[in-house]
Length: 117
Length: 113
Image (cartoon, rainbow over all chains, first blue to last red; front, side, top):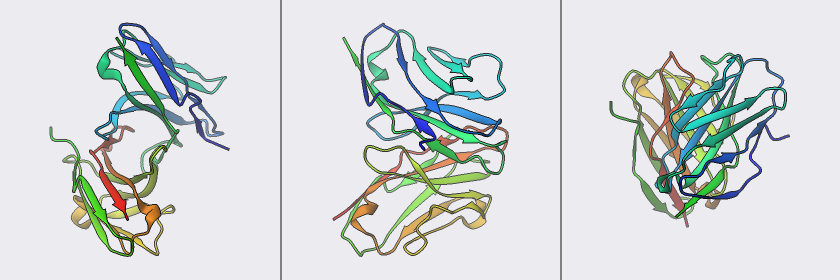
């Protein structure tokens, strides 16, 4: 079974609008972390936001917020006020266990976001 | 603060040749990772170092891939001999001890002909 599922291979959004990128995960570990990374065409993976499994509140970082629904095992990324520079591939990733020495990330297949004028 | 550095950025080789990639992590980051990202997929972990020791190399094809991190700083990843299916982007990431977040370099795009 896939540990991280991103069901939207491609998304379009108009500039200045909000967009939600879906991510569901599968783990039996009570301690885990969820990450979103942005990968522009240049190839570098840019860290956007992190949510720990024990965090009570949804994470926010500027225009990025993570809609964490633990019971549904979903961790959707919301980008508000989209900009042309947001056009990129977006990856959801999970770290299982308590972190520290392990800390291996499992990535989804990504969602290609295109922001249009 | 300087980010993770990788070189070369691009490499084209023929199958059965050997190739090496270099990574310099963010200063002070004890943990270093090598990922392989095949076109259309997410990155897959190849090997993880903690200082100069290997923590996880369970997905490293050890018959052809090798990696080292001498002195717990820079790291090299080698493929010998390369196969067509090794064509991918090889990403290096590093992580400080006080956070779960990994910081990635720009990657090396390998094409095997």
